[in-house]
Length: 306
Image (cartoon, rainbow, N blue to C red; front, side, top):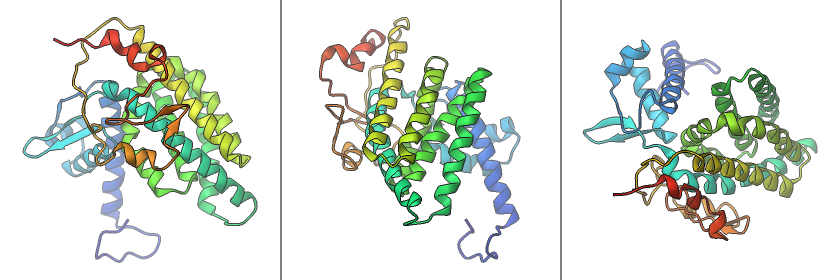
């Protein structure tokens, strides 16, 4: 996007601006990877000068990358303190999955509705067709990386797939909301990717098949079930880990997700998900139908206070 006041010819962009954007995207991907892998630990300072030296770029793309990562929930900026890595999403996991169930079911349903419009030629949209083609490429790439056990790459492809579905919906609100939690989703996914990844990937083809068929209800159901399976697998994995101190503080607003409250998410759907009311405190408040099935109970051995 051109800078305000500039007037480049259509289809072009200032070389310096394009180069800066390209650098910030590239370095942002590296910093994101290093945050998720623990190179930059939760709460760690992210100083522009040090990062510029570490990633061999100027401070401008570092600054732009940190802004982008803040919008994804991976970085926090505080007055007079600068930027730092956001807290681990483990404490927010319950709420994150609850929001995903509601939000992504809605995106799949809307995408299926638009698929009917595209197949009928009602509202021809070349962008929609381009995204749909990209989804096929993402799915094929995922099959390859699973075969080669390149799970770091699978985590990135997984997020790309879910973003593409949101874009197919044609809703800027859905895309924006998903972007706000995308960093933490990828972070959580990476913790369980070797276990859940190979199981989850084929489910993506079921989701897109329902969307292509214009089956709105089924698309929403298949997407919701997909996220629930990821949730259950994640909490099973966490329950199998040795007890450890993971902290006792639970925020009232989702860390790193500015302005996103329960009502914001629930208003886009029916307000319920699989019989449970999605009422997150921060990115999710869990209301179990049975204490035995609550993910919170799975986490109980992991949370110690004192």
